[in-house]
Length: 276
Length: 194
Image (cartoon, rainbow over all chains, first blue to last red; front, side):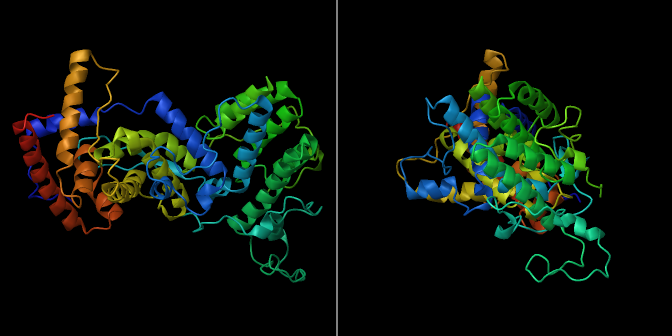
């Protein structure tokens, strides 16, 4: 809909706005700093946390405008290689249990162009989806993340959707109550997260083989799951921690090709650098 | 659903096993960040955020967006939605610094344009300073409509939706904003600034 009463811009104003549109993109340094802060915050689970922001931090401590609201936003200078690797593992793995869930909630939309019926700039590619993501601010309940508890040997709950509807009800529990209904993406995600968290926990305990076992199980049960990106990143870290550096580097190269825009790339690079 | 493959239950990855699936387009936070960082930063500049605070505000915009991605309708363009977040955070920030004498809000400076010839870069930089100064004179309720429509070229129905305005109201605000902006440009030139 066009407003017929809308007066056109004067040539002078149009020229000024053209100059404004040619504004340079943020510098590489700016982008790198912001990427690091956001990666730390997202992977720390802050995206699903208490919502503390830079504004909160600024209002709490005026006079430190660049402090930001991100604990562990950037590594302290002079940190050792091992410590950097540990931090990378911690960041990535906490992320798998936290921010990754948010990623997973919004997967698989197609990229479409929404035409701009008017205005001086070309339309920009925007994401769209054939279906809306399920409303959710927290991807899973606490009970879905049990890092210290070994998973039962049975199949993950997502496979319960193949059970016949006449199957006897499972033992009463919060998770098994809706056993007759197909599992939601949230429930699948919870099962994935449990495996990813199991790998994270193993890696944090310095047991990369156990981590790789959980990763292999995730690959088997959720080959095209919602946390594949996180699984792949975890695997690279587990390989690096397990001194399988050649394989870690090979996987890292594949990861970079597959996820060129991943926020986990920096963490992986830092982890591999720390092992060099 | 694929049936499980028990032979994959092992502690090391199979050499020929595909580690990662083929990439799929998505609205994952990392994708939003990569594709929209420049848009968010220049939007914040136009909303009056100076270079000293740009990184912090951009950080807040993306963190807020990531937190609220489940409320974003992927059938709509993401830029008006992101701009709405940026606009509200910039307004909050202005309210904050208004009470903070150490951080004057009018600290909007222009970075050099590395890609242009010196004369051209200087002229463009001057024009951009003039635009920012004039934008600062546009009423805050009308400013986002003008920026999104006349500078970013976003479709008006999407702008109206993002700002929760009736379409007619959005057009009305644009018309007034254009007049305010044009007058502000004249006034800035009369003052001999920037």
